[in-house]
Length: 480
Figure 1: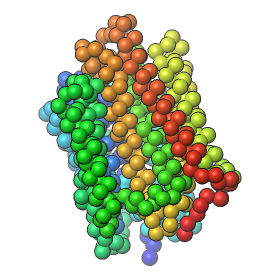
Figure 2: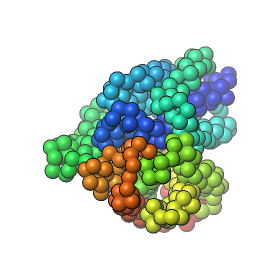
Figure 3: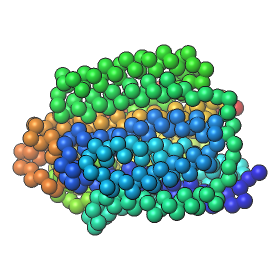
């Protein structure tokens, strides 16, 4: 039995997606104000972002399985309620470490929302209308990415940093009440399956160790105890994760899927693309505030070309995917991203940098939009029908993992290039006065970061091209 009002289900779940997407975009431009308010150092400031991203990445896997076991409606409503309550509490944080802990709790709510949105829509719509409903949901997420930096910049400029979190509250309350009366309960379909707790724990500790090492290394040095401990955690727990996953009945990651080369290369390209381009908006938003002393609102306006490019290219990629192979479209998109990052590296800090920064972001967004749709299609069609849920979960995890590592890595590279007295400057916005030589050092760090992104994109191009030799959009190795 389908929902009586499937479009209401779409609206309420799209509101949840919009909140979670806006949450990331608004904070990217508000970060200097938050850092300044708490007098936070470079490491603490970076963890305001990283705590949410790290917990969200891992919990998406855990909650996806929980939803399969216990059903989606109640978990979605719990997630939206928790996200709303924590957003309210964050505005009262007495210090930066309480804020970081609350951000991790907020990530749990965000993960519950994200993992249940698409299945709730799928349950509500009949098959002939499902494609339209899902495309609208994706469009809402794209709009959230587009307006997030602008909304965040305006809220900080007009009302203060707390409203970056408090604006979630009325929307969240509406979403919870609406959801109670709109969403119907559907029993879980995998009640006999178990959650891979050891797998999730080991991957969390391994990834957490890597993020700890990257965030600390650029500030306190690479031979410090936290960095060494983080790297040891990464190596040990990654090995433990692989060992566990090969032995449990219901693994977090099914390694047998990687016997398929097109699937493996497409997922590797997903991870490398996310690693290369995810921190571009954050770095550019910080740059305009630190170097040009832009207020958060103006800085937010100058980073929306990435999302505009994605919105332009994504429907084009969808239309072309039936005529051209995933390898051709995705690899072409990555070339566009590569050119955009190369232009950023070349022109950042120059007298004519504004035009090139905006144009480069547009290219990166268009390249990403052209890459993602056919690459995702390739992943989903190169696994058996009954494994598509697992395959999609892994794709989402790799994309999120690339984003969290990208953020930590790029901030580490930029701060590593600076002397001790300037390591906090990247987060200070217009509150720090920089000399010409200081700006030169900062620009140098940005160029190194963009160079690393360029290398990651080139590796993504290689992975995308090596996926298979399919000759047409409908000739991927298809299962099911």
